[in-house]
Length: 143
Picture 1 (spheres, rainbow, N blue to C red):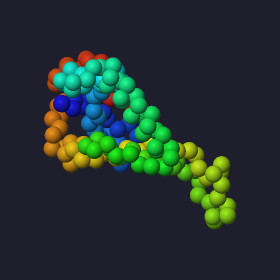
Picture 2: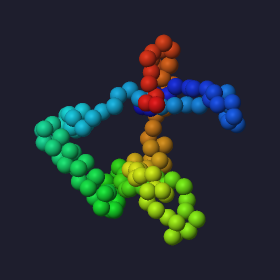
Picture 3: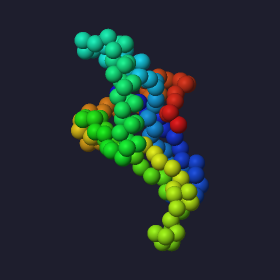
């Protein structure tokens, strides 16, 4: 279930000023060990330690492949790729330099398969967090 809280837009230069918008509540951030523990509890046939090792190797290899300019698709999860953070544009190809025109690189992840936006919308159950947790709860949106 996805829980949300409402926040009012406080940007007085925005056309959305003082309108309310839903933000997802982040209940926990799981690391690889947490994920491995969870997976081992689902009768995977593998121990938590084995799963941690495979996940760590997967992360290392995905990073390596992305830095080689390859996309990595994990079915029903995402396609991971490298993006470029451009600085200012160059007036011509001859004026372009990496130092002046590129800020850096970034990781991109696009949902695919059963994790696509369409499928998530069909599967998601959304509830207002304060209705479940009370108005005085310490709620995080991960921002």
